Length: 128
Image 1 (cartoon, rainbow, N blue to C red):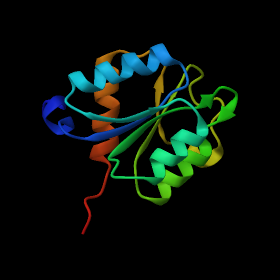
Image 2 (image 1 turned 90 degrees about the horizontal axis):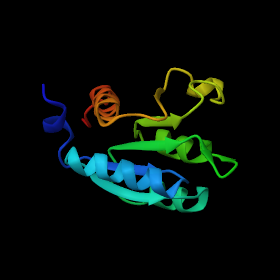
Image 3 (image 1 turned 90 degrees about the vertical axis):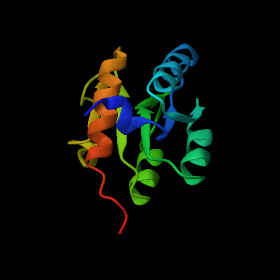
């Protein structure tokens, strides 16, 4: 299946503290047909967006200006929203509870992003 078909219209929360990277990710998501929620550049705004409206999947920078993104990940998990961690350090820095989560290694290409999003959404169980 073409990634783009399964991603069209999906609402993706972006939490990334580096402005240029957030803009690049927004552009990649727009090219995939996704609707961007955010981006949030700090923990507080990320928590606010995560607790708000409909989100299909989230891209979370592990380190937000020295603050870990885990409170946002926990909130989203409680809502059943799949999370993809974005980091330059692989699984290093993730908590035990987060091992096994999808990790996008920075820097990543649009194809890597599309693949991770498809994986995250494919693992999602449809609401009954």
